[in-house]
Image (cartoon, rainbow, N blue to C red; front, side):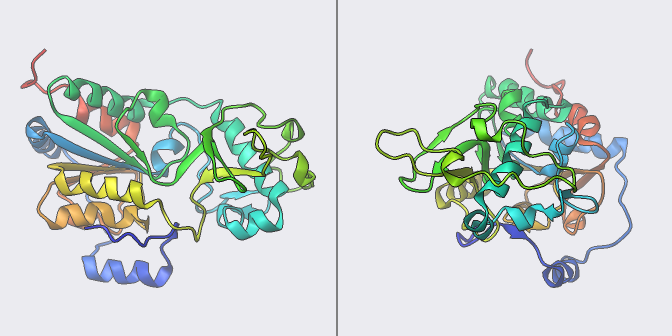
Length: 306
């Protein structure tokens, strides 16, 4: 069972160390092999309810900035310094510049083979009465663009807004999202804040409101949506195969999703560029770019009807 008290944020160093100790993590990489793939494919062919958990690594292969690790800055700030209610209250213009930049970048990006493999697998297995559900930490909507239907976006979406006054949420794909942000948001460290007056930032268009809009994403320190977590819990409690794709397994709540599934004996397959703190708990680890490793893993199995 997933406890419904998670807040968005990276796992701290102390807890990371504790998880490594608890899970018995080894530093040595465990390379995947042809026999691993064959064994995975055999389990895959018999699975009827597959959960796929995805993280920033999938989007990175489409050229999406992750703002994690060395060099992960927008201007002189990391995402953790901008994606907070406090930052928005203090300087909504700067925060909107950051999200405007990210929205505009995303409009130039496309799903990669990993996104496409998941979407194709979902459609194909759906016709066989089997189910694939994607639980993603990503806010870029690339899974939607690839055609994924059963999708839980636990951190929200770059292309949704929420009114600070009336609370209304809606999809918003305007480019730019408001005229004052046009040409703004350059990530250059020497760029100056636009200092856009708050009344010229994105505003609610519902009659009689005109409240300030914010990105409908879960910021650091905010509580994740209980309904979405409940849906994720149901998916993970009932799945008979779990894939964890392009995620470090150190950001909550995804850090606990797959280990909880593995703990009840369900096969878990990790697809990542490197080992994670949870790798040794999983039945399979496929090392390399997800766009290379995932398509052959999810391709039509010989046992499937044409």
